[in-house]
Image (tube, rainbow, N blue to C red):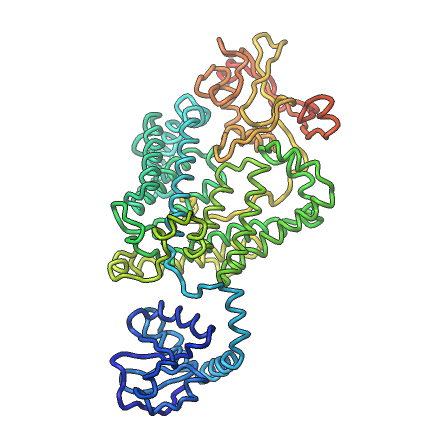
Length: 636
């Protein structure tokens, strides 16, 4: 509030005087110094010259509240002094303007200030609990440095993983040939008179070239750009090109690249473009510009959407297995590609499975809210999410999904926390940066780009989260239109695996025969087949054919045209397709017939495995695909 005092010898710039003997005061003064930079000076009231410089201010006034002495000599104290001080910093005008325009706000904040001032010991304790030793916000330079390299490694794994399979999946002799898809897309667009909008509807570089060599070029370019990003060369342009290349391959990959982690990589990669430093060559760590707080907010909001939506879709799906906390009694053996640790998790008692399920809900529905709390609570939320992700990646193979989520969890830390994890010799090199140089400010993304993007993405995220509740409010109809328009880019997506729990495991066993009497099974690299083969770890690599076989078993072959194409390639003896398998029982010539049976698979127990050595037990349920030959395809 205005103290009614005016000093005779005002300071050359605003000066805040505070109680230097108060730990609570000195903690928050450090934060305000960071926010106001060089525009405000700070001086403890214990300074021996304070009484001489400003004799007009009574000594007891320094003991009860902070005093802001403006350059015109006017003195303010209490909440108004705080708001006026922050207004001298960039982008901190709104609290003071609200104070000036709203008497109610002024009265409430002055009351709150007096409450805190008279109970400083208690609020100092709360500050220590919630913020620790650091209330001043670090520049998140080290946090960004680690996150961008983690993201680069994930991009590298994604491109390499796809590159090793691309010929068999979407090559000319693969299961879903890209050249045929692009020819059909071009023909459809021409017939319907679709012009430039075809590039939005089918966003891929394969409009230029749909050959196998160009598919390989895109994978190779993705690998090269990921390496450059790891090194720190042109991070923003590299991220933009990585997003474009991965979107291009995801679009033509169709069924084989239609997974939520593909969407998450595109979404995180896109937001990381404005999070990255605007530089072309690698810099010394201390010379890197601080990241945009808006970009950091969007990436944290993405983690919130991912985790909270995952909990909501389960809770509101109506599946009694989630409501009764029994879902995990099925999950470990019915998930697409379990690990051998998943076999052991399946053996745990019912009470433990229910407690685990309740813990999962607590983390997915509760921990995301801690993302928006003070730093120590935020760390706890990040640790809980990371703990859940580690348990998931130990018991199941979900490609790079869990690794990417863990990378997003890094953004909940700050430089003060991360630097403590480094060897002592490196701590001085990566010391947290708290200042903002003018050069760094000029090299940031302009606010006319980041602010509208933040507003639009936040609204879109709220809409997508509301869908997990089954809510479709009319006022969000324009957002629904925008969401549908952006859908082909797979960059702003909804998330939530296993909304309805699969309680039985169906497996398709594909067999070939030369005479229609003796049938030999094809063995896949990771999906269950041979009951004696131990479930393996594959992540962060994703065997995409193995994954699609799990989805195919949930329906009928007529609902999965790609599966029919897969059988055709086996009959043709396509080396690109058989390379996707662990064992081809017809290495010298393709079979004359192919068929597929449907089996029920279950994990064995400790006793059965000890006796038989089998990890699985199975029972034939019937036919999935009747015997077919090349002649059958020629007829059709």
